[in-house]
Image 1 (cartoon, helix red, strand yellow):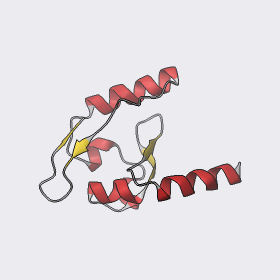
Image 2 (tube, rainbow, N blue to C red):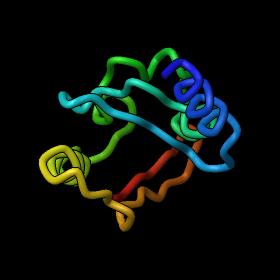
Image 3 (cartoon, rainbow, N blue to C red):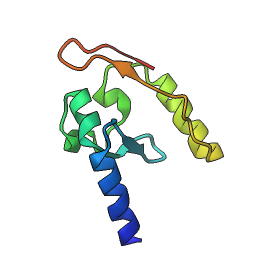
Image 4 (cartoon, rainbow, N blue to C red):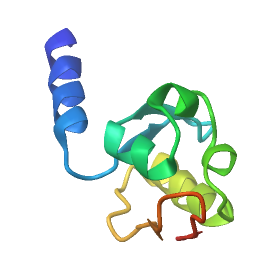
Length: 93
C-alpha cells in the first residue's frame, strides 16, 4: 500500500497537468504543484478546502460531478475547467 501511494504521489507531482483529489465532503486531499500554481495558492492552502474556497467559480458544476463520481464510481473524463491564471483570473467549468 505504501508503495502504491508513493507511486501515485510521484505521478501526480510530475504530471504536466493540474491534478486535485477530493474527499466525500468535496475538500481537496491532494493537489499537485501545477494546479496550485494555476490557482495562485500554495499546495498547503488547498488541503482541506473546497473548490469554492480556492477559486472564484460557481461550485455547482464541481459538486454535481463529484457527487456523480462518488455515487457511481464512474470517472468524469469530460469535466474540465478552463481559466486564466493570475490576479485577473476567470474560470468556467
